[in-house]
Amino acid sequence: MQPIDRVVAVVNQEAITERELRNRVDLVERQLREQRRPAPPIDALTRQVLEQMIVARAQAQYARQVGLTPTEAEIDRAVADVAQQNGLSVQQLRERLGEQGVAFATFREQLAGEIITLRLREREAASKVTISEAEVDAQLAKRAAGAPVEYDVAQILLRLPADADQATVASRMQQAEELLARARDGADFGDLARQYSESPEAMQGGRLGWRTAERLPDLFLKAVSNLQPGQVAPVVRSPAGLHVLKLVDRRSEGAAAGGALVQTHARHILLPAGSPEAQAEAARRLEEFKRTIASGADTFESLAQQFSSDGSARNGGDLGWLFPGETVPEFERAMNELPEGGIRDPVRTQFGVHLIQVIARRTVENSPEQMRAAARQALRQQKADEAYDEWLREIRDRAYVEYRLDN
Image 1 (tube, rainbow, N blue to C red):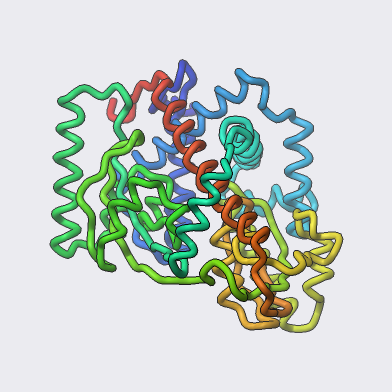
Image 2 (image 1 turned 60 degrees about the vertical axis):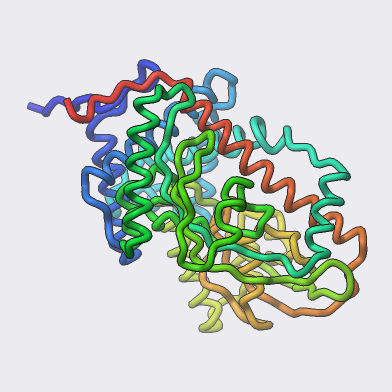
């Protein structure tokens, strides 16, 4: 007799079961072990994973309402693409997932979620972003004052619904202040984030990664700009909730406005990967590609033509000569750390996981047109990120959620 699979949460009358939650928690635990990162206590990890599933479920429900849910044929094509990128047949992919403890139905659901996320991001955020000439002028004025500053920031997020009553706000504020005190007293910030944070990057110790000022929310920038590396800012409240912010490090990078700057000729292989398990599999596959190239058994260009999902695949992954600011920050930082001819370990961005090679570099004059284009792109990316995060928060706040985890 099969045991009853009890319901642990209800999202707008749609259930999340204990088996679904347990499978997802097991997967996250395995990934943390592979990354040699400490896992938070199981109760805290379970609640973090459940919250992520609630947001994903609410987003999928909205996608169905507005007609953005992918068809079975589209998911079939996405599965076939993943299999091809990994040099496998669909059946071999199914078998490998089974060996890793991932149900094929779960994998299909995750691919559907990635497609939905991309469509909703474009519909609800990116397509609605507008950048005025005055904003570009202001951005260029900041850059003219000196080399851009980048911040390495970590956060602990305690979520608050938009309609939270005073008692709830006071309780969460007390918890945030306690976490702030512990961080300032020397507790490991990454461990605190993994145990208590409700942000997507909690399992990475709350690290947001290196970001220029324009890629940080204004509230975050004001909180950390005057800190010294290692210091923790007072609690900040945003529409998403309460934030405890630590400035991990700060650095200056890039060229000031005007004068000469360095262009990089690069190529890459891109494997799309929105879910944690897809990211791990893409990184593993790209590591194989890197070893294959190093051994001389195949070339970067050939592998890019066969497996890269980017439009540059037909040209062997060649991206041409890139100006600073033309790629997303994670890609650009990884590229800038490479010598000519060097190949970087796999790098994750919002588009997937990349294997990057630098072909050559050259110094050119920085034209006014190029400076404006780079400033506009940086502002567009920042606004799209903020708009999508705000939209997700609104979707979560509007959803009816009933927790049954402790029942």
